[in-house]
Image 1 (cartoon, helix red, strand yellow):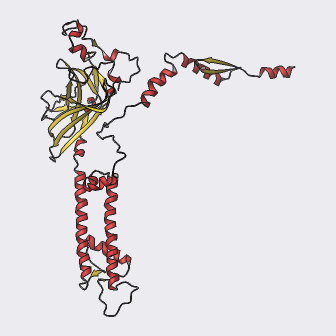
Image 2: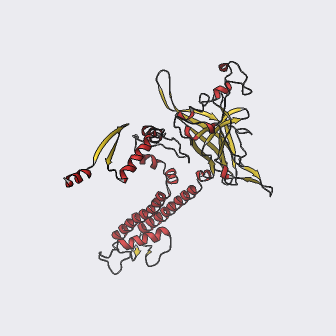
Image 3: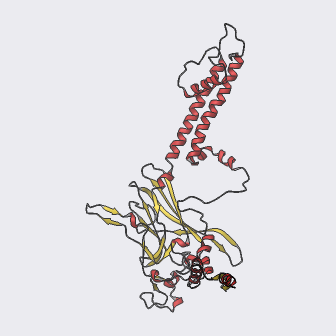
Length: 422
């Protein structure tokens, strides 16, 4: 009986508790691991958000992440498929542009391969010339035999002679003789072919090094766009800077809003483009781009942002693509800088921090550490509330008594819909 009771005390009795579809196993006596597990489950169940809400707010947005048409660094996110002709045919049709635009490792491969391939082709031609003249080692030669190329008697020596001829490094042990017109003709053709290949790749290298997009790397946009007041109007603002001391001449900036629109008839327009006009204090053309500038788009009744509000902006499905065109002062080459902003990258009720100041030495100082930093400012809830007087009983929009002009502090709001502010 003592043994049996001792055995009964060591038995574990499991109770299953079904709490919100979570099965918790408890054992008596409980071990330390079981106690920790029970406390963890209790802590999760007491959280203000359930596990399902957590997954919906944090996992689902990442799974359904909006795809960009233009990346932040300006590249087009497009893949061509089911073309009528092969992609290689389109690339080879414009061989110059293809060689200039391919990556450096591909360019290096084709550069080396073109020379080796040309050397090998002329190796076979020189081998054929020597074979027809009876210069090879396995052919019977008479005492008064005149070779087309001295000491060219197999494929290896033909390859060495081909390299020496095309690179024009000078003949040494192997040298052409004046007794074979065919050898002289091949010699002239190979020299010209070598010059053409060398000049072609020299031009490609120079063109690739001096591409305008290299100049555009010095132009940077702010990571986010802001919506706040500018000269008594609600506007969307973007900051851009040129980190080089050389100017961009004739600069102008404009934007395209790319969205998907469904008509009342049920037709869907994918990638519909809407023009977005950007301004600066001095105008929109021929900008004096000597320091970072803040461009702004006035949100009026003609703006696609007019129907948006602070609580509906991040629920929209669009992409704002911004273009900056200009001419490099140093090279006189035209360039274009591109970037894009998703709804999550546009903050409502913020403004950029100032970055330009004067130093003690009498120079203007630009603090790029504050280039992307913003601060909250009182802003209207929506552009419609600010502009439409008839919808708010014709109350004057000057002052806080206007019901349609609600001044809000963005940083004090709690976003209950789990939207993420970037």
